[in-house]
Image (cartoon, rainbow, N blue to C red; front, side, top):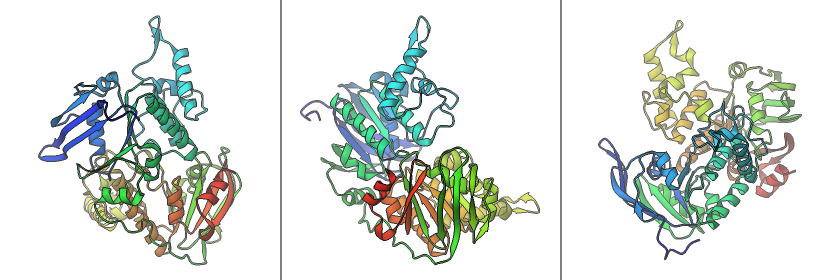
Length: 497
């Protein structure tokens, strides 16, 4: 890291941001030096994204000053910030599905030759960047149909080609597994050695020690702490984020009953994503599914819930075969899926919370085939109170934090009183405070006899919430571990088998 005797590349002084009468940033001071990584931490709603947007030119401060490389800095657009050497990798995927990987990586700045797009150079440079991140898909392939993890890697590759002097990384590993994360960290260390400054935003606090030189903590729009080193206990960081002493993150795991609710026998993907998977889930059991990205976890639970086709195998409920061919069949049988991408698959973002909750519960909010607006409001208000959603029914889903969006997705399905709830990456991109409330909901379901399946790439999470853990690798089931024998070593040994 460059000595702090040098001048900072970016300096922020008393940055404030207001929306009407409401001030959301309260006089932020911060400096970033060449070749260092600052972890910018805080719960959802702390102001991290607003501050990042101001630095990256997508938002304007209400007051305050910034300097970039010693000069006054006030970008009015992201393009202006990029041209000056400041790039932002968004948590939300912003790829164009009908364009190729290479076209997405260079969108808006295609390399030209003789007045035409130089496709050979564009694809060669894109291939180089995605290979550095461990992606083996050709850059000429369209983005449409790629997994969330692969799309995230393309977003990162896009930023690596900017030749930026400062990169803001907003939850870059949210969709990545261990192997992809390690490759990304190698690239970050390389960028730091080349003098690039990094602002790193993440809810995976175990990553911070590996990547950050300093930590800046925000809470309720204010900078509340700055730690000169990232070599700190996670508990210390969390307590500074939430402003209170933090009790145990994971509640005690409930003891399931002996009766089997869901059974999967010889399930095999029609698309070759997984093969011959067998397991059962008892009443009130939390059954974890772990594995690296590409192991077939998501495809397996999508098949169980009727979203993806199978080649052979059975799904049974209470001993009766019910193998669903489409999600509606699974829902009617009492199996619901909270998908990994809440924005694309779980919510209609431009619609209200009340409407989103009602879409999965039409029979409860209609009368004689007619939608009843009063029932929608009452039904939604009940779910909002029950699951602690911070918002009102009339509010649009895209106006909410990630944690509250996830609660809405969970609420709309739990209102159906399902027998089996499948949660794919239930806390992806969610802060520690919201995570605790999601874990409480999961444990509350199990306490009431619901069978719960939790898919997670967060090893600490899947260990903390599960009675048993099934591990997958390369589409194969490599083992099922009891809670007493499951730890990070035993899970990873099976995940890399």
